[in-house]
Image 1 (cartoon, protein in one colour):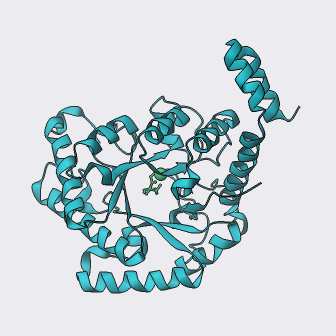
Image 2 (cartoon, rainbow, N blue to C red):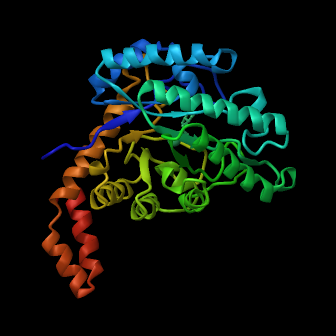
Length: 344
Ligand code: 3MF
Ligand code: MG
């Protein structure tokens, strides 16, 4: 079976296990050590927050930022890795407490745009042309707290400012309906692509779809992917899993609902995703109970589940599929899929 998919994850996916109710349970793994793990786990691409590549990015001169990013590119090359994208991490800085691009304070909005331009500079030095915008705090705890109509216009202004700053950069919006906010302004890929179509250079704005985020929006992740694929706008994915409407779980791909995972692999296959050159990103978290020495299994296992489901997608009897479609006999198709997945 040809394995033509390339896999990526972010350094945050190897983590110390803190959650909102308890402290860290595993020692910090250095960035250099994390990079060493990539190839061993079967991954080629590294996803970055701006400050994963250049710590304290705000306090450094533009020249210093570029120099440090260059050094990181060398480290990547030394490990045979490439950078997939850079995401400005606006949600941890005190200036981003009320959101970045949609903060009520104009000074905060300016900071968010300036920092995003720096993230674009980092991407360029790392040799990638993709920026991901996870719009974490671009939303509200109570609706009356922000002027929502203006907020949508501010989002567009920020996107345009980034596009104008770097004529090569492409922006992939990662929608999520809630968490950390009660309501996010860009909850689905439909919202993201509507915004993209109004940008000053629409062909440079697309999307990244995360499984868990689609489920939290009450939607099917494979349908969200299909929508983006139909427009040539699926530029990355964050595959993981989510057990219903609760906190964002980032479970191992396929762990909660194997058939829903199969459908995502199936749609990526049908949409020619690997031919676009985009990575299959896995935004998964290890269980807090996991011991340090086996706290990367969630990454290897997610990739393994993906490849096993790819095998299932590629080996499904398409003559039977055509026959069921022709006969409008979806009961037979349903059972055939279930039996194929169960291996009976
Ligand atoms: C959100 C993301 C990341 C987060 C990461 C760590 C690009 O789903 O994908 O942003 O920062 O998950 O919390
Ligand atoms: Mg994600």
